[in-house]
Image (cartoon, rainbow, N blue to C red; front, top):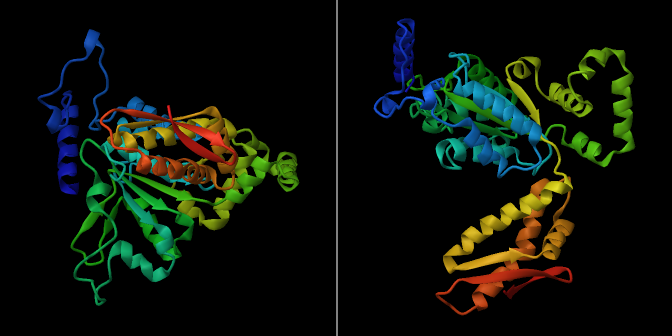
Length: 375
C-alpha cells in the first residue's frame, strides 16, 4: 500500500499542477456534478464528517469538549491537510475511567469503516517491560522469531485504504515501558515502522493514532467533589503570577491534568501529540440518555424473540440510584443495568411460553429491585 499511495499522490499532484481535478480511482465513474452549481472540495477521503459526528453524539454523552476536538480533527483529515510524512493525527484522551475514551474510538471506527472492530487496539499494560518492545517491532536478528518478523500490529487496519484512514488505539499508554514509548516516538516522527527483520514496513502516514490514559483521574474526581484540597490548588493557580497568561487559554482542571501528563511523559513525547483531550466525569443529567442507549441495545438483542422492553420512570431512577458513581463512570451504570434488568428479564423470557406474536414487557420498580411484567 505505501508504494501505491506514493504513486497515486504523485499522479494527483501532477494533475493539480496542470489545473485538473482528480478523484480516487473507485469513484471516477460514479462522480456527479454538485447540485445548483455548488462546488465542494473533492479530496481522497470518502467519509462524511457530519454523519460521523452524528453517529458519535448519539452514543457518547456529556463530552462536548471532546466531541468538538474530534470534529476539528476529522475536518483536517478530510481536507487532507496533514503532513504527508507523518501520521494523519496523534491524540491523547485523558480522564477518569468509564467516561467513553475507548468507546469513542470504537464508535469512530464504526462510523468510518462500518465495524466497531475496524481498528488496531494495543493494550499497553501488556507492554510494561522493556523487552516487550519486540512485540511491536518483532524480535531482533539472532533472537527466536526474528525471521518471522511477527508483530502485534494489524497492518491492514493501521494503513486503511486510499479513501479511508486507518485507526490505531494505544490503550492505557502510561503503563507502557520507556522502550515502548521510544518506539512510538519513531512512529510519530517518521510515519513508518520497519520490522526488525527488515523485510516489512508498516506505514502510519494514513493513520489516526489515538491513545488513552487515566492520568489525572484523581484530580478530576476531586474537582467533581469540590474538595478543599482542590480548592487550594485552584487558589494557588489563580494567584500565582507565573500562570497569568495561561489562565486565559485553559481551565484550572486542564492545567492540573496537563501537569500530571508532564510528570509522566518526557517533553519530546508530549511535543509530538497534536491534541490532549480531557474527558469530563459523567454528570447526572446525561445518565438518562445512557440508560436509553443501554435499553435500545437490549431491545436489539431480544428482538429475535419478538419481544420489546419498556422501562418505567421509577425503574430508571432505581438504576441511577444504584449505578451512579463518578469514580467508575458509565461502567458502574452498565453493571447496575445488567444486574437489575438483565437478570429478571432473562428469568421472564425463560418462563414465558413460545409465541409467534410480539410481546411487550414493562419493567417496574419493586423495592430495591426491578420486576418484569407483561404489558
